[in-house]
Image (cartoon, rainbow, N blue to C red; front, side):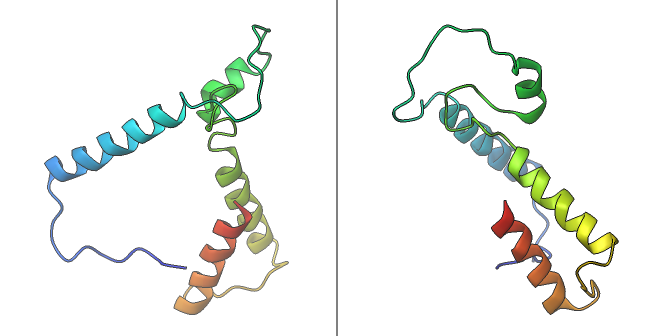
Length: 106
């Protein structure tokens, strides 16, 4: 699994703004594409406030929001903190394996 490295050059504010805007546009497009086979009904959404927190949209590709990513990270940190899994975070290989396992669980 790839790990982020320090940038070779200073990233300009304009470039950061461009990438942030691109991510926002992708998210907005995904939140308007309905899931295949899901029948849209005008029913009460009991999870509305939870959807606001988790950045999800009912019946779209962003149905789960950021929940799986946050949950995977939380579980891995709990396993590491309780010493159920042995990881040396100063070792680059162990850190890469830990990061990769978080991505797999997400």
